[in-house]
Amino acid sequence: MKKEFFSKSPEDTKEIAKKIIEKIPNTKKAKILALTGDLGAGKTNFTQGVGEFLGVKRTITSPTFVLMKKYKVDQEDQKYSNFFHLDCYRIHSKEELLDLGWSEMITKHENLILLEWGERVKDILPEDTVWVIIDTKGKNKRKITVILKEDEPKK
Image (cartoon, rainbow, N blue to C red; front, side, top):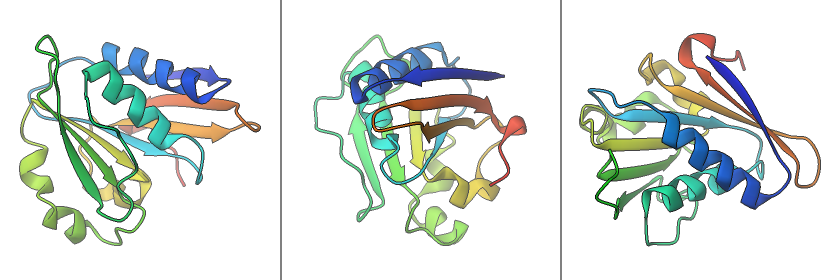
């Protein structure tokens, strides 16, 4: 599966994120979205849109220095209870991701996991990972491509 969206603003990016997350089917394990794109492309904006859709009350900021943030999903009608936001920019090996509790995190179907800089840990991601590639096309313009892992771009 491959689908493209075009954003003209950070608000558009958030709305696109909401549409994408709404369409993702339930799975027996955690659902993982791996986000790629240059610095400032909108990965955190996308994540904020997902958080808004899930009813997360806390402000979502990039976990660059803490590596991972966990949010409680506040809407009872959601298929997820926990929302994990990881920033893999400073992660240099799969062992570092495993040290964060990755193996347990991905086994629970009630978890939704968004990984910024997912390409840095692609060798440890499950086959059903959804890839979200955000390309900068101007000051506020973005092309957002959603693809399945088997169609993963070679970076």
